[in-house]
Length: 603
Image 1: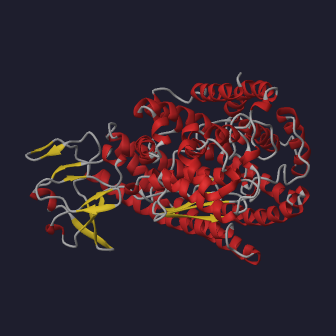
Image 2 (image 1 turned 90 degrees about the horizontal axis):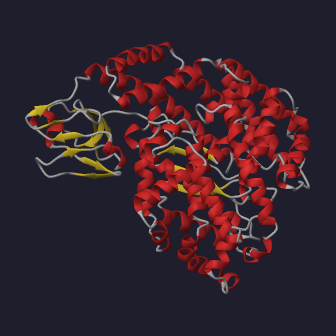
Image 3 (image 1 turned 45 degrees about the vertical axis):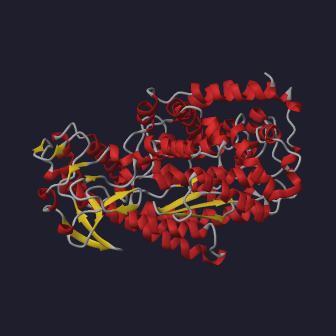
């Protein structure tokens, strides 16, 4: 689960440089500051991915004269590039073919400053939210709700201010006058969307949402302890009613649920989600039934026993660090429900939970959240604190967690690399296990009660249950107190399992403490992960052999270049077209599932 704070980060023309611009300019490369040789400077901002989008030509005396110190940072000053130009605008020694964009840059800088303030407030709220779900004592809950409500109100006030509205309008005029400037068009699209959504919501409603979210979280924690949904139902009923208010305020063309889905997955409707999930149900329900007839082909008993928490913790950290998660810019903690949040590109927090009776649950939880964390650490630092510095959508975010958790972590090559490390961590428990034993065990298919522990074949059926319950709630066809019964009916129909209590049923996820509409992104993420994996194989070559050697850098570099480093320049569909040549399609994902589990179960 990615607790994605509003990643509104600042774009445009800033780089670490010496205190006096005339002394020369430093080059920023992936977070490191390097002083280039005189006369050979090609200017780039931030990550490798951003170099494809922004650049300046060779340095010249004329370039240096337009640098002006604009504030200090550790070890130097922040200087504004007056000569920054988008990709496609070339300039070099003796020749300048760039378009004049001075006015556009002025307005963009003003907008970036406004969004930076908003982002700072939202990131501060994210810190409080992270603390609430990790270390805060229960007695602080009421006060935390008020603190979060205050910060939400302040952010909303700035986001809906007349000044920001007027800046957006003027910026839109200038973007229309420069139709070839794709980057600024993307900035306008994302900024205008953020403003439009906020402007439709009364400030009182935004503050009330934060208070109710905090109240619902406390009720959820207590209900989980008692395994009794009725203790959560009153708070949840308020959340549902609040979501209806939000939907009515925002507006929709089809049904109220559309407005909520659009927050997390821009452009998707309830009908589109129903068709997506319906198609996957048609494929997976009979596949689950066929596998059930051959379940004796896989033995997963080696996953269970006594696996000490400390050893599990270190093993998970070792895995995500091997993937590329930078613990100098992030950390892992414990929470009731695993999640990821980001306070900055340089401060990304993941959480996990551990069950000492099995090592699979904690490990794959860490791999999942580590995938989210890799995305957050890879977002373009040069667009920090603007709308372009955040992830594309919930679905694209989930594609990163699902890709690293499943397509890498549950692959045969990964266990060729990782099994010796697992054996070292757990000693005798895995002493006799082979790569094939573990590979098959972690891919055991069986209808289960808990979504986060579900195998790849049954996972989307869990999402279908939640989607259909949420849709019925928003339509007024289902009341909050009746959710457990509806949940049980759908679990029996799709997975042929019956929850023994509410903790194994509708209390297992944290999502409903904050609202509805967030689950569809998991299925979109599965589909996107399948497309990205196929594209990565085509671009890199033998991914399996690289992974078996513990060489994860080529895959991470591909994702940095094609996904992370682009921020939110593209929509989900647009990103897929850019990376794979076609829009969102389930075929690569279905091909992957059918080939993998057909081979494991001899279908």
